[in-house]
Structures are given as structure tokens and as C-alpha cells.
Length: 253
Image (tube, rainbow, N blue to C red; front, side):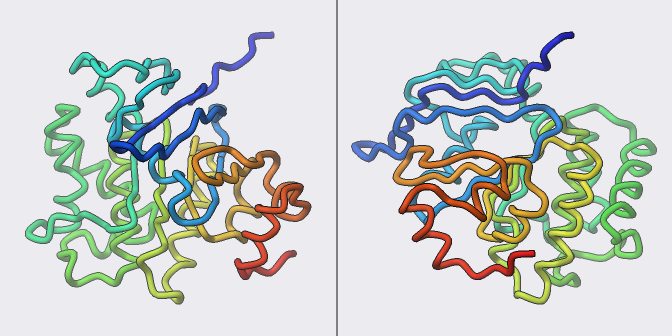
């Protein structure tokens, strides 16, 4: 039986910002169809690692393969970069919606410009994914008419319109009021249940425990501990992870 090729492989990846080394020879992988949560204190390198996965940051050394595309070298052919960006969706802390466009127009822009979809097809897909995140009635609304949770759900739908193979989430609930967090996490859980490959940087420990297959705990630019989500979160082995979790409040089922 063939062994599936991981969607993401990173081996001894180093990332520097000037004299500051943020990722210090970090290694790991993400299998296709897997949900991996990356946790750790602010400044540990988790968002930087995520941004390397879709080439928003270039690595200084090591090997990084995403969907079979080698991101290890500074030079990347424009065709490969377009292929990478089409196959890897990203949802940020901030929603980054165009305020002068309706919700549906925000969703259809990239599929038309990047994928060459017709207006009819991009509109059909846009409405499909808006319905998927429960916001089809808001198709003609403008971003400033939405709550923060609704804006983030639109941002997720916008990424899905590109039909990505991998979804990256960089603390997608950190800018939301507490009462709006659940609606975004529910959409993400639905995607996970449907088999989407996902890498999620998060401080939502309960979400990580219930939805993620594996957890990577980063500390000072290195993987301090990793393994099945419930094992790592319920039975931490390292002192640093125990200290980190003691500062986080989440109810264990």
C-alpha cells in the first residue's frame, strides 16, 4: 500500500529577522487531511512558521516542501508561486476584506482574476461558500455592516472559493469579542470534519484539544513537544508546556 505524501514537510528550517533567529532548526510535517494546531507563547515563532508555509516569509536554511513545491530556495518561479497561493488558503487575525466591495464581490474577485473563472461560475461558488458558512443572506452587504465574527466567516469563505488543498489559520479568533468566537470555531470544525488539511495557530486550547489531530508546542523557535492533541494537552511532558497550559483556561471534557 502506498504511503501518502505529507502535505507539508519542514526539516531544520531556520528563519532570521536580521540578527534575531526566530525559527531555530525546526522540523515536522502535516499529513493530508490532518488538522495540526500550533500553540505557544507570543514570540515563540508559530505565526512566522505559518507564514513560511505560503511564502509570505522566506526561510534562511533547511528544507520546506508544501504540496510538493520546494520553498527552500530564495528564487521561486512565478508559476510555482501562483500554484502555491492557489492551493494554500490563509485566514489572518484581521479580516482584510475590501470595504468598498460587497461580501459576494470580495469572494469572487480572486477566482476571476487568479483562476480565470467566469462571472457566472465565481458567483455560483461564492454563494455556495457563503451558504456553507451561514452567511448567504449577507451576500450584498458591505463589510462594515457585519459583526467581527461574520467578517471572519466571510474571510474563510473567500479562501475556500480558491478551492485550496490546505488552509492556514493565524489566530483567527484573537481579534473577536468572546461571544463571537464560537461561530468562527464552528465553521473551522466543520471544515476539519470534511477532511480539509488545516494548520491552526491558536490560543483556543479547547478547540485544539477537540478538533486537532496533533499539537505542536513551540518554545523559543523550536518544537518543545508534539503528539496527539489530547495526549499533549492532557498529559504534558515538558515543564515549559505545563507552565504554558497553567496560564491558559479551558475546560477539559
